[in-house]
Length: 156
Image 1: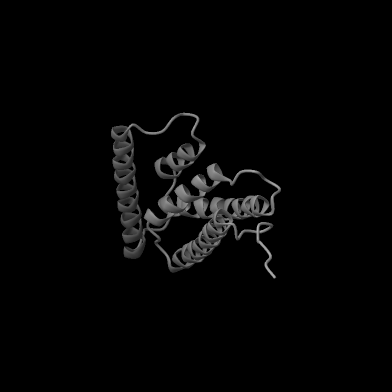
Image 2: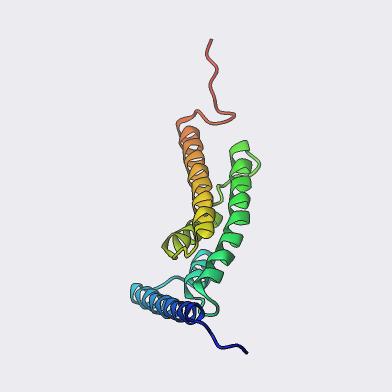
C-alpha cells in the first residue's frame, strides 16, 4: 500500500470528525426522546423516525442517500392514497403514512448535506413534498367547505 498523501489524510480526518459529530447528535436526540417519553412501540411512524435518526452504522452521507431513496416512493404512495381518498375510493385520508413521510422529511432537513449533488437532490425532493402538502391541504379544505370533488353544488 502506497503512503497516503496530505489530501487523503485530511479527508480521513474530516470523515472521522463527521462520524463523531453524527454520533454525538444521535446520542443527544436519543436523550431528548427518552426525556420526553418517546413513542409507543406500535407507532410505525415513530419507529421510522427513530431508525432514521439513530442508525449508527455507516456515514451520514450513506444515511442521507438511504433516506432519500426511501422517501421518494413513500411520497408517491401517499400521493396515490390521497388521490384515492379524494375520489371516494378510500373512506379515510392516509394519516399514518403522512406522519411517516413528515417525520422522514424532518429528519432529512436536519441532516448535513455534504455535497452539492445531495443538496440539489434534497431540495428537489423537499420542493415536491411541499407542493404535494399544499395540494393535499387545499383539497382537504375544499372538501370540508363543500367544494370538493363530487360535492360541488351546481347553481343555474
